[in-house]
Length: 447
Image (cartoon, rainbow, N blue to C red; front, side, top):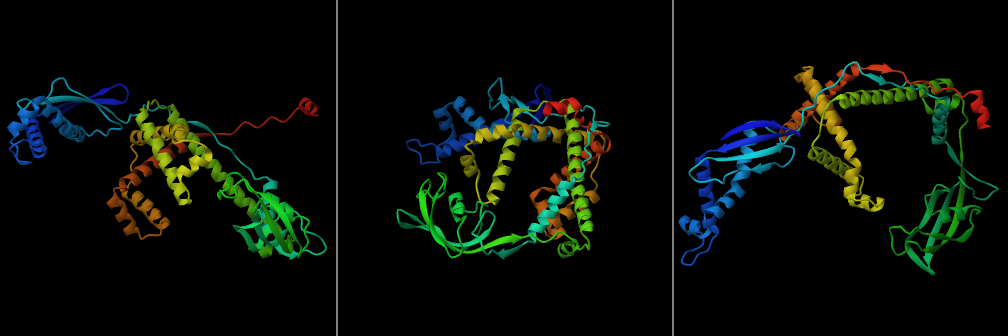
């Protein structure tokens, strides 16, 4: 089979394919044989009809159409393999003359392919880089979280339950005087105002004394999963058994010793500040890296076929569906809760899908332009990291990847990371403009 490739506009190539007469003849014979096995004619058992009678019954034109249904996809796939073309969508196939047994058959296929970007500037890009600093208020919030974590619950004496207290209650829900299943509990510990239970029920506990019992009416939301009580008002018989309040430890050196490896509160606060600063710096570095790579991608000239973007959007939605499954729910349930549709979700992720494909193609082109290479040592190191993360032996992990054909995917991802590193290493960080301080006129206006 002979295949000629011609690049055409719109990220497509045209394949001009010539199928030898011998292959056409063999295809016709296979089709006639297949039809002879299926057709029923008087005087012949099924599967025993001679092929010349099949041809006489259907006619050559119909047999050729049947043959093309079976053989043309095979010839197209063979032409793709011969031309080393990876399509990104279905082809448009055409031919001027139908095949015949005595002649070679020629057909044309316009095939959408992944476009090659025309790179723009990707070195020396000026990119905004933040220099975040930790505010004292954030350090204070972290210290307060520690105090809250190590707080004690102490019994309350001399006052009724109030917002924020931890109470122990028994309760039973009734509808029209009848007990309702799964609306009761004993020794249930509740922080009043935390919205663990129905708001009406929690607020009804406020003002109750230990050992007091009362009936509290509470309305269930319309969207409550149990349809028999959704939107209805139940009467809860509630008995308050115990009231406790949270007692926070004093913030001093002794507290620092109890909750950390440090001997003083100052050391604890400095360590908290250091960790917060490290987290802010890492986040700023990620934003800087992403911004540099995006600038390089935006500088490239590239028209993406809709089929490529649609496929990436579908992949992203499927990944989202898998993550929902791991959380114990489903994409269908998510769409129902949000009032959305699959079409709307695909449209929502489409811009992100386009950016993802564009970035991937540009990184591949940068790697090729710069002659970047992933060594076996680079690959071994990454596989070792992945094996450790998966808590598997390195050889077993590598074997599984090889069996599934995913080794090349890991190598390609490493190459793209190297291309991104090159872009970032050659970028020029630019400090953000400081925010102007308010003038006296501004302050008078705000007053």
